[in-house]
View 1 (cartoon, rainbow, N blue to C red):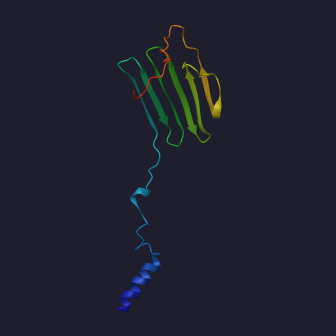
View 2 (tube, rainbow, N blue to C red):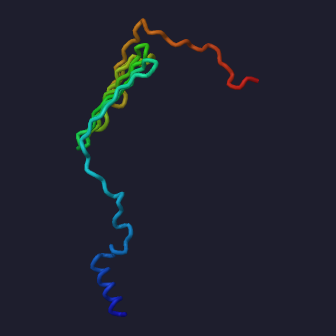
View 3 (spheres, helix red, strand yellow):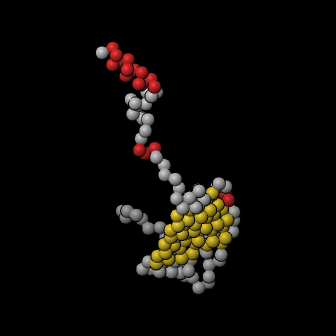
Length: 133
């Protein structure tokens, strides 16, 4: 019996205790190498709003892409971005009301005036009670 205990102690010592350590390997520890990819889509709904997205990764951590929409009145937003070793950078091109040309936090916003033919939604001038008394 003493020989068996000594043999087990010797094996455990040689292997550094990893034989009895359940945390030594876990399948979730595996991280596959990055793979280059490229995908995108473009849709138009029943109201005429167009939504699109395109993104590509080079497999080494650099990602470029764009996403945006155009509604039936011609108001649009297009966001182009890059994410790489220098961080995340974006440029937004839009005709949304209330936007202005600016560059906050490394993002470039290019605001274009709304075309005169675009109809504005009506503005609610009176508050409506959510729960009438």
